[in-house]
Length: 342
Ligand code: SF4
Image (cartoon, rainbow, N blue to C red):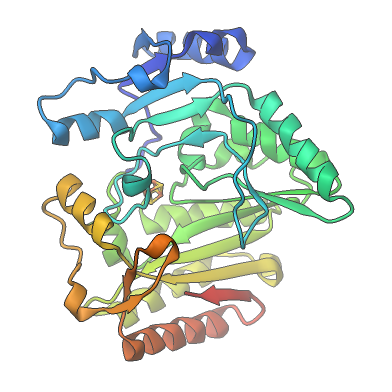
């Protein structure tokens, strides 16, 4: 996907129009000529166009619900942040292995919350509780917030808010390159801007509806030049014929793009491909033609939370992936911070 996300259908919860952002979005979508419907609750967004589950799923991912976030109690988001900050849920992307497929179940539409100031006030209370410790908020736990932000500018507002707090920090990760409106935000170094990257082969085959690698890397260069602390999540690391070269090439391109002075404060996280049995089932339902390798017998079992086990790579494969990726990172970015491999 190269153009930024444009919903095919937009629902408004009536209370959303009590907020300036809600009214602004209504006007914007009217001008864009997008069909607007009203719903008293997002749970009623049932009669989406489409003849079968497959079509409805696709339509849902192109549907935006503009609503008000009622619970201002934040989930925890260990280990990379203390809290998940809820600005949006759902995503317009179609990554075959996306965990939202299991967590969002039958409601895969994209939701954005317009009571941004209330959400930020709640964040301030969490910050005050932990003072004098730093409190980190992750904004991409339940969506790809950057993919939506060109419409709402919520993230920009949040970046500037955290830029002013002494003890609050913001972080998020994205697979989209539509970052231009965020470049002049007064972030004050308090937001870590992370990109999810992968070998070209993996993005092309398994991440439809997101930005190509070359665009993500270009966007990372812009973000670095705008002075943001930067990070990369290489995920999911996937074994395929030619993976060594594919991942090496990814690092070479990053090396060619990133300015020298951004490299002292860049982080890398590495996550190998994994799946669970319930996830495999929904993947095959939503993306029946996927080439994604999901053979339990080729994998090793790792016990996960809630008693659901995960299938990860065999020990020797895992070691090879881990060593190789770390080696590339050290070769091209000797000053980067290696966060973890999992
Ligand atoms: Fe899921 Fe992220 Fe892909 Fe969106 S971009 S579908 S959140 S993996």
